Structures are given as C-alpha cells and as structure tokens.
Image (cartoon, rainbow, N blue to C red; front, top):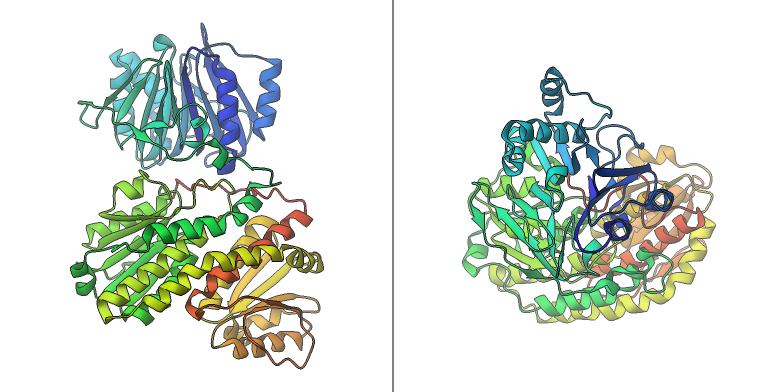
Length: 595
C-alpha cells in the first residue's frame, strides 16, 4: 500500500499524477513513482517524499497522456528506488501499481522463475506484474490476463495496470482494498480515494470487489467478477477540494482540531432523530460487540460502559485485529457495532465479515459513504467529519464519540424506557464547549514546553478517563514519538510505579466520580519524583501546588469529548517543539488496508 492515482485524457499526465500524489501524501508513505505512456512505458521512482520525485521529473520530464502514480508504504522490501512502484514486467511492456499484499507471492515467484522470469526487487508487486505478463502472453487478452492473475493470488489488492499494447487505457481491479474511478469529460481517473482527483471531477464509479475496469478517456468499461459487463453507476461526492486543503493553518492536524465543533455539530444534527436499528432488533439483542482499531477502538471503549449503563446490554469492545482469532461468543441476533473512519480498515472489515457470518446484526459507523464497510453493512450511520487528511485522527474521533452517545441513548430508550431528553440536550451542547476549549491552546503549549525533556510519560485515569487516557497516549506516541503509556490509575501500584523516577511526567485525567481516587494515585507518583499535570472538571482539594487544566463540565458520560481537545493540543505541540512531521508521522499510514 498506500496511494494510487491514474490518468487518461488529452492533457499531459505527468503534472496531474504528481499533483494527485501530493494530495495522497496524508496516507503515509516512504517512496513514490510514476509511469507515463509514450512510445514505451517511461518510469520514474524515488525513495522519500513526492518532492524528490517531482524534482526528478523536472530533470527528466515524461511526456504522454496516460499514466499511473503511486506512493508506497513498505510491506515487502525496504524503502528504496528499486522497491518503489510502479513495477514493470521483465520486457518493460506492462506497468503495475499495487496496494495490499500478495500472501502467496513466494510460491508464484518460484513458478515464474521456472518460466525464465528474473526479479529485481524484494516486492510482491513485481510478482504481480510478471504474472499478468505471463498470462497476457498466453491469452493475448488483457482482461483474461488480469482475471487469471487475480484468481491465482491469495491476499488482497488494488491494482492499476497499463499495457504498452493497449496504451490508451488503464485497467483497474480490487479485492478488499479501495479503488475508485473518477468520471471526467474527455478524461478519466483511477485513485485510492476521492482526494487526488476531486479538483477535476466530483463524479465517481465505486469499483466493486473482483470487478475489472478498462478506463479510457472516453469510456469506462466494467466486467463483474463473473466477467459479465456491468453498468457504470455514478456516485457524486458532496465536498470540494477546499475541504482537503490547509486553509491557512500550518498543519492539517491543527486545522482538523479546529474543525471539531462543526464535525460534532453536523454529526449530531444529522443523526439526532436516527433510529439506528429496528426496534425489534434492539429488544431482542442480548449482547453488543464493538470492533475497531486505533482511535476508533478507543471511541468504542468509551461507548461500552455508557451502553451498559443506559441500556443494560452486555457490551464488549474488541481489537478488530484480534476479533476473529479469540473465538468471540457471537449469537444470532447480537449487535456488532463496527467503527472505521475510512470504511476500508482491513482488520475491521475482516471482523465485520466474521460477525456477519456468525449471525450478528451489523451497525457500522463510517466517515466515507460508499466505502467497503458501508457497502457490506446492513445498517450504516455516518460521521460528518468531512475529509480528514492528517494521519492522526482528531475530528473523526470526536464525531465517532458523539454518534456513539446517540446510539447509547437510543438503545437505552428501547431497551429500558430511558427518557433521553436531558441527555440529548447535553450532547447538543458539546460543540459549543469544544469551541470554548479551542481557546486554550496557548496554555497547553506552555505545558508541552515544560515536558519537552521527556522520553517517557504516563497518562492515568479511571473508567471513562482511562479510555480517554488511551486515546491521549496514542496521539502522543503517533506524533511526538515520546514513549507514552496509558494506565488505569489504580493499577500503577501493582508494578508499574517502579518505572517512576525523578521528573517522569504523569498526566492525570480526573473527570469522573472516581476523580479523588485518581488524584490519590497521582500523588503516589509525585512522592516518588514524578512531575504531574491534571486535567479535570472537578473542584479538587490539593495539599500541594500541581499544574491543573480546568475543563468545562457536562454529564460525566460525555466528558471524553471535552478531555480529548486539550490532550490533542498537547500531542500536537509536543510534536511541534520536537520538529516532528505532524501530518505524516514516520512509519504510519492513514488508511490501513493490510492486516
């Protein structure tokens, strides 16, 4: 993985491809490359940022109206020029860009080597392009060559393919990895998502799994998985390129932190009267399974106790990557809440399919209409966060929390006869309180400066505060590379307090009924040399002077939405002070489409 863009039309492809790759940089990557069709397939590849590739292309301009571009996040082989995509077949007549993993690439490589193929890279992608070449030489048919290739592959993929002998076309196919086709006038595109081509068109065809498309400047021709021609149905995106640009902010992350009041407000307004699931489904449900990864998982950890409190339904939150392998006890009629910003997260998609197979009713929360998780779910609700470009999520996480609160209230209403009016009023007040917290960033900057020396840091809390601490810790690790650990405050003395030494920063989140107990645990670390900082909405009686950030108040169940804001700023400024790449942290990708 990570980013694909392709162009066919009347314009020179090079600049469009470079521009598209720049718009895909948010996904995270370690190298980039392009192929442009002229008399031959012309390839340029470079380790590092798209700027390196752009500078290289200025020295070696490639001319042609058809081309492919790719940003690579390494899976097979180290980041370098040779392992970068696009990869060419041995004879240089077929080019392939690929997101995903070919799991049986070693076996296929041995087969091709026995046929005389030579390999120059460490990648599974080079196996893919030579396998297409092998079947093309056998069949003399582009569609058949691609179909035979993907039938041989175990794993998942999104392919963009160019054949020198059919040089006006780009071929596209996918399995468990996203790929869309941009529908222009006198030009068409392929891409990993809408972002790189939204400047040129808002109309797209959402390629289904197992389909193969031939994309020329005039037409998009699609065969379904049974090789029957399929009608191209247009899907129109409702946002424009300004939503995916910095808008005067230094970083996308900073912009997206400031967009949270609107993202939460829009999500609440759109879903305030949503039923989410049929009443009968809720009444009959005895168990709820929440599956997600990363920050979405932390939103699920917040939701678990709230659902159990309001609806009295047993609820478990699982790492999506572990879900299938822990033999979860799923009964027919259980509800499975699936959370994914992109709607393409590979582990989460696999968990969804497992839960569905076991008879669970799926309710998915996604930010991208038409994503794979959306299309495979019986019931989907949408966060209204708009495009999120920074790798570290902020506004999508906040939107997910607000939606989970609404779902919990609805479940409580149906299951327990909950009068949710007051709770809904509290939820509706969250955007204005988040807006107020945005004014605190200068205070948080000073806190971040005071801990600039830190190599290790702890964030503690109890109950919902512990779930908030896990999200805060993840942000700090992602952005600043500080080794940060979230701990249930009461667990510190059962071993981990041995790691506290003079000056170790310990941040305490204390917004729940257990706030005083959390502060007692914090003081245990202070007596052993820790440097403390408290985030609270409570009036605390402290015998010593401790830096304290005062949060506004709301119902305790919804405090994680307010706690998140200053801790996002804390992570942002910690990274800023250390001169880290805030929007594209090292080794990370925005949309994780491999397991």
